[in-house]
Structures are given as structure tokens and as C-alpha cells.
Length: 455
Image (tube, rainbow, N blue to C red):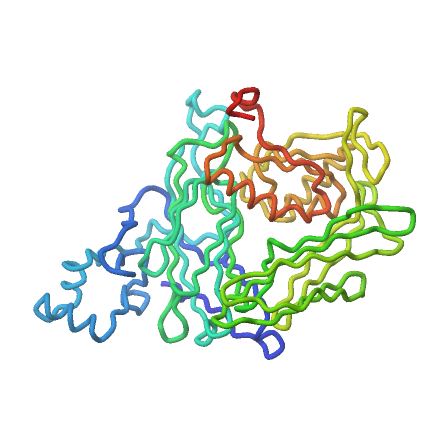
């Protein structure tokens, strides 16, 4: 059994700052359905089985208190495991066997499936749908929770995803094209408390979202973010061009600071652009609330972003114990009956509608592959890219920022169901600062597009 990976403690210089640790290595993977763990429980953190540490990993499936052990023995003639089974229904039998293999993320398990001659699957790659399980064991430093929240990020899981952590059901996600962000601070184990066990069930049998090849599995990166209790809300950080003239750009700045402590905190963020510091207002933030800051900044002699000259600036958002860097471009967009205008000049678009998969790899694409795709399109004369038919990945937006490509970022479906609206809001907030974003698309070829419901 492979030992749990261990996240190293901070250096003295970074001990209070935000830290991002990728969890892309050392995943155990199983193709096909298993005895699916329960989602509801009779007792907290007592589901057991593959959702918790196994005996072979030198840990108990759950960690009851002294009083809990006494009660379990009391109801089961001194046998703790019998008490767990009878009282909580804890799974004490599931094991990892030889059908599990080690994989590295991003991972598309559908690529390895055999082609099946079924006309119903022709447009989606002639591969059968199914279920796959991923399992990851990791450890956290003992004192981490005293200074930081721990947030677990999945950038993309295809498709229906169910997630368990340390013997409890953690979350469900519907769409394969939206990220999943989960604060696990209160659920995680630290130091001598033992390892953390993450189990993810991916299911493509519940119906596709698209009529193209969508792949299957955890096909984008997974990481842990260790965030100070008084921190920047990363999705809120925004620098944008309000107006341009021959010698300067009027920039708008937005950011929010979250106070996750039990006491008010007086905070004054600083934004650094072009080696100049912009001090935002100094305000008290109540316990467990956030404050949104707004500011303006005049950038002299700006280097403009265009597909031909993809000039980028870096904005550094700083607190005493937090730092987030983001790139942005200086540009303006305008649309009217005469066409599209970039930086005040009419600009002709030569675009493509491109799906995210890649021959022989499926949808498990890293930055190098995505950048290669974009660079090849640039060589063909393309300057605009529509993310057909779903949200553009972070890798695609980054490549388009740096290589020079305008992006139409597309919402998956035109629905006002709460979870679809939430996904749309999340996509806009996460991608709006990318220099390449030029357009938003609410949907593609919807049947209800010209109806009252669609409007």
C-alpha cells in the first residue's frame, strides 16, 4: 500500500501566506461500479469503507472519542467493530484489490475503453458510458488549522461527481464543465489525527451534457489551497479598462477581503501595478463577513493588448498575510451594427469553434497541449476562439492571454435553474480578468432561444 503523501510545513518566509499544493499525483483508480458508499449516515464520519482510512493504511476507519468507544463497547459486548456495524452501519469490509491502478491527473478513463459499434454513440466517440472511482490519501501539518483554512479544488470532473472525505459524504456536482470548491477545514485530519482520505465517484451514465466526445473522470487538476483566515477573495479580484486615450488608461480595481475570524479585523489591501502601489481604504471588517473595495488607477503610456501584441501586466493584491497575483490586459471592446471594435479601431475577427478534446488524449489536457493547439490556430490566421460548447478552461484562457487570441466564453445551457445560474455566475467571476475574454455566450443553438422562456 502506497504511503499517504505529505504536504510539507511552510518555510518561515511563507508560513502565514496562501499556499497552493497540487494533488495530481498518486491517485488510485478503479474502472466500473463498486458497492457505492452511502451518502447519508447514522453517525458522523462513520461511513467507513473506501471513504476512510483502511486497516492496511495503519489507521482506524473512524476515530471515536473515549466516550464513543465506551458506548460502542457497551452495546456490543465489548466489540468496538461490532458496535460500529450495528449502531452506525459502518462499512468494515470494503478493501482495495488488484483492480485498482495508480494514475496521474489529469485523467480521462474513457480513452482506454474499447470502441463500440453503436450508432447512438457515434457522435460522442463510439465509447460506452460508465462509472469510475478515484481515491487519494494525504496528510496535513499538525498546526495548519490554527492559521489557515483548507480549501479543496477540483477544476473539472466528468461528469456526475460524488465526493467523500474521511468517512463522510462531502459534495455532489452535476456539470462536467464547472469547478468544485470545498472548504474542508473542519473535516480534515491534522498531524497525529491521521491521514485524509478522498474518494470520488464519476458517472457518465446519467445522460450526457453534449453531443460530442466528453470524456470521463477527473480530467483537470485537483489542488489544496491553504488560505489565511483573513484573506483576499480570489474570484473577486478584478482590474479592467474603463477608458483609453493616447497617453493613459483609466483602470478600475475591485477586490473583496474575507474575515473568517471571530473578531473584527481592520484591513487595508494594497494593489501593485507597474511597480506602483495603490493603497485601498482602511476599514474594519466584522467577524465572518467580507468587504468589497473599489478604486481607480491611471496607467501612463499603456502597452495595449491585441491578438497581434498580447501585452500583459501583473497586478499584485496584498494583505499582511495574503498575496494573489493576476495578469490582465489593457484594452477596450465595442460592438455595433458596423462590427467589432478593439481599442477604438474596427477589428475583423477570423474565428473557430473548438471543442476541448485532443486526438489520442481525450479531454485530459495539460497546459502544453492546450498552448500547442492555440499556437497552431494562430499559424493558420485565427484570432478568435469560441469555447464550444461550454466554459473555457483556465489552461485555454491562459494560452489565449499569452499567445493572443480573443475568446467567446460560452455557457453550457440556457436555463434559469438555480444550479445552472450559479455555474454561469461562477464562470464569469473566474474568467472575467483574462485579457483574452472579448465575448460571453449564454448558450448554443437552444430550442427555446426565441421563446418567452428562453428570454
